[in-house]
Structures are given as structure tokens and as C-alpha cells.
Image (cartoon, rainbow, N blue to C red; front, top):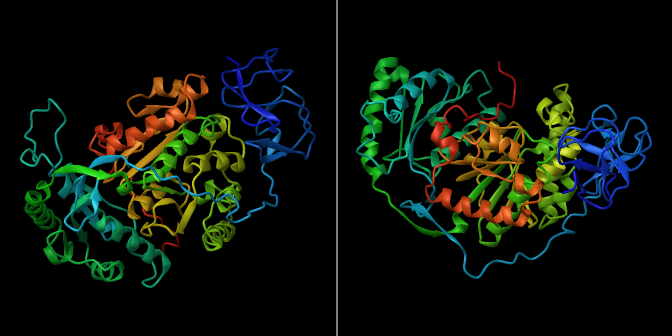
Length: 511
């Protein structure tokens, strides 16, 4: 097996499969490695002049800051971000979707209104940070003890309930009562309150906060009743009484929540949020394109996938506008890119402040390189819509949601928009989990899988090692999606992740 991977014939770099030492000959490249090159990092295959573009995926990933000789390591010491004109060509890459004749199914939970759930939780939400402790205490009352603990299981009589979770946050006050930040927070909370993976929801407030519960209900068109209960600490007489009242409300919700059963439903009811975090030089070669192959299958079976993290598609957005089904969809994406350029500028930041330290250690050098690999998660089908953070996703196919690149915030927006499953690729390692939607994690390399199997659900490192094709890994991922949507527990669910990972996007100033 070659010690390197060539992604495209037009590239002037290749990727190290393993650590390369000086003197290693790259077969087929007529290049001898000069010095040490870590696994996942880039090696020049020809002389690159200072100021000349460096290409990977047959795309520009930056400009050489000095002359680079064939065989030299290409990284932050000699490659930097550079802006350049990109040909967007809206719709130029649109192709008909080849839908399958007999769509796959999964065992979902059919709600009374016809919506489909992949999990069955009761949620405790908060209008403001001030009610977070009380909300957690309410949920903790119903926490299942670990195996062998000896304590009674408070949900023993409700085997069809996956749990009671408190999703708290640090916002809800000290902001404009008519501003964008409050509208986005309410849209996020409203998306969770409506989410089919919640059998019922309790919202706990303080009482005097800016984010008044009635304002939330009015903006989001929610209806209090058997599935949605609300009250505040101030009206209840303090913390202890609030917790006791909340516990009784959840107890009353449990019998109805338990009256569910799983039944086969078409895969079109699956909406998958796509995430990558702790990326490395292999992300765009293995796990991300494999997830993209699974997304292509999902779309052909009628389902939907949500690509997000606007700062981490920056520089590669022209690949998405080519797939846009209309000029309007392409323009919506470009408008969000322009918003981010203005947003970062007024906060004294730049769009190329990525990759992170861990990304760079894994072989990624510029945001352009990271973005091109991240976009691969979305596969090859058409881009059918662009929505704002936490906005409901109704279209089937690949949808882009505008979110930050920070994974917990991005995934929070996706779940608020209706994602009932998250798929998360990682090359450096991740301990992320989500509630109420399960989160699957895929490793980009087998070394990570070996080291962190407790947290990773599937390994895509066989692609790097030449043991598996991208398409074969995509098929495995698609089947795992269906099994997980049918109730198969993920590694993060086994660890109890999900409550602390609810992080709404805090857009503006805290006053």
C-alpha cells in the first residue's frame, strides 16, 4: 500500500497515510520525502513558488508563503489562507434525484398528529438561566441509576420512556425584549418544545425574566395542555416548591408518554443533522465522504439531511451554490456568508480564524482546506433549501442551516429545526452526545477508533488503509442510521450525554 493518498490528479500535494521519514520514496509521484511528515499531513509533489496556489481536491486551499520544494512538508509554516474569486454558477451542478422504488424503513414512533419520533423523552426546558437549577433537580428525580447500583429505578414502570432530561441554558434576560437574540432563543426553545422526540415538555421560568414564557408561547404558536406545561419559580413560592411541583407534573405525564410503540415507517421521516468536530487531514478523505455517501442514499429514499456550520463551509460555498435547485436558494446561502463576514468584522474577528489547534495537529492548515472536507458530508445531491438557525426544516433532500461552527450550538439549531438523528464525524476524538435526538460518531482513522471505541460508533479508517471504499462505508453508515432511528442506543447515550450539550446561539451583547 502506498504511504500516501492522492485525491485528485490536478493536486500539487498528497496526504501521508502514516508518518513519513526523510528518504521515503512516494511511488507513482517520483518524489522523495524531505524530513518528517506526520500522518494526515500534506507533502508537495512538485515545486510550488511563493505566492502560488496550493491545490487539494482540485480546489485552492491557500497560497504558498515561501518556495516549497518537491517532497517537503506543506503546513502552517509555508501555507496560508488567501482570498480569491470563486465562480458560483448557481444550479450548474443540479441533477435529477434517482429516488428508489422501494424506500427503506425504520421502526419509528408515530405521534397522534402523524409526526415521527426516533426517541421518546420528557423534556424540562427553561426560559432563563435562573430556573436552570430547579429544572435539573426535577429531571434528576427521574434519573435511572447505573447498572448494579442497587437503587430503585424511578422509571421502572415506564419502559417505553427513554428518560427525563433537563435542557438548560445561560440566556433569557439582559437582552432587548424586541431584539434578534430573544427571537432566536425563542425559536430554538419552540423547536425543542414541538420536537416529536419529546412525548411531553415542561417549561420552567423564574417569573421576571425578559424571556417571558407567555411571550415564548405567543411567538412560537405553542399551546399549553397535556403535552406542554409551564410555570415559574416566583409563582410557585421558591425553589423547593418549584421542584416538587415539577416532579408531580412529570409524574402525571409519564403514563401517557409510555403508551407508545414502534412501527415500520418510511425513511423519508428521517432528518439527519450533519456534524464534524475535531477534524483532521483524513476527514475529507474517509468519514466525511462516507457520510456523504450515506446522505445520498438517505435522499434517494426520501429523507432529509441538514448541513450547517457556515464558518466551516467558507471558501467552499461555490460547490454548494452549483448544487442549488434555484437562484433563490443560492442567493440565500451567499447572503448568509455575507452576514458572517460582516458579523466577524464588527466583532474584530476574521472568517479564517479556523482551523483549531487540534485540527492543525491533525493536518489541516487553512479554513479553505477544512471547509472543502466538511462539505463532503452533504454528499452529491441537490441543495434544496437554506434556512436560518433553528428554523423548521420542511423540505426533503439536502438543506443548509446557518449556524456557527461550534458543534454544540450548531447541533442545537439542527435539532430545533427538526433533526431526529445527528451524525458526527471526528478525526481527533469527540465526546459529544445529544438529547432528545441520538448522536452517532464516526472516526476518520483506525488509530482513533482503537483509542476511543467507548465514544465512537463506527470506524471509517478502513478507507484510509485501503480496506474499504467510500461507498461501502456509506452503506454501513446508512444501515446504522436506520437501526439507531429504530431504537439502537448510541455510545453517547450509554454515557448519558445530551443535557449539557444544549447550547442556544447567543448572538448579541449581554447587557
